[in-house]
Length: 335
Figure 1 (cartoon, rainbow, N blue to C red):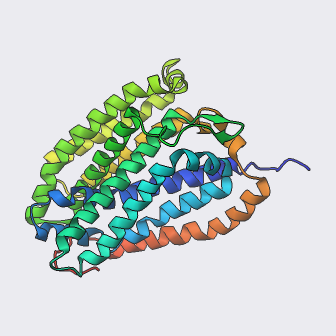
Figure 2: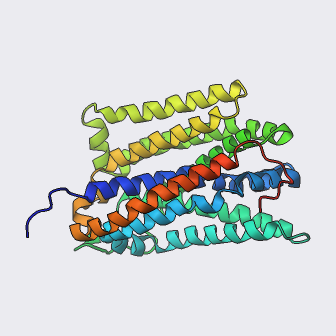
Figure 3: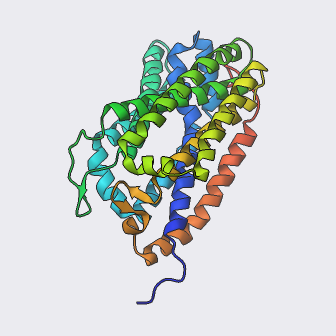
């Protein structure tokens, strides 16, 4: 058989990478609301927090489905290794998302049991965020493989390093949620959100610094890529820190929309730094994108279908955020 004229492996890698960062940004502030939920000063503030994400929260998770389905279709080796390695982490992630989804629907209708659904929403969001961060940490650590099979233990994904990355993502999502609330609320709720941003930013930067120092000791490949010689990837952490400074100044100036944009910038540049650190390994430390990819014919067939889906999801997402732009009230009843 002749070689394909154009290698679709990197097209699929770009699509999946885009789907993942869209999920992190779109669902991150949603999860952040849940992480902050039990710290809200009153039930009135919780109603505002819930209404600020009610119109968009279910659509946000479309990106998770798209990224996961694309990963299975384009890189089946990833699934055959990741799932045995991360069974417990993925279970915690899905359980957290299920708990928060059920709590989201039932809280609006509950009266005497509302406090239980408050806790379910908060705990589910926190567990889901921590599990996502721990999975990222496990990816950085790498996986013990042999003959394209995972040969490690069920708890190898859980280590002090992955606990730290899990806590880091919890803090990051909380920061994203706080800046979203600054943009969408007003009055005492907005002032409470303003007060949260600076300590959360300090926590994120501290954890980011520790992870950055720790990572080269976890993976020698990352150490070589970053420290063997000066490369353009050093611009990525510099840009992330610039966004952090922009966020700080925006909060000082009491701006409303800019802090959320700056926080998204921090996430984007940190994410790009992670991808640049591990490229081209999709199952570190052994398997590259090309080794994990499915057949060219399978990639092409599925890509044709996805070319119709992605524009629809983008248009729906943009339309939803446009329609429900502006401030929210506690009694808007978006549910």
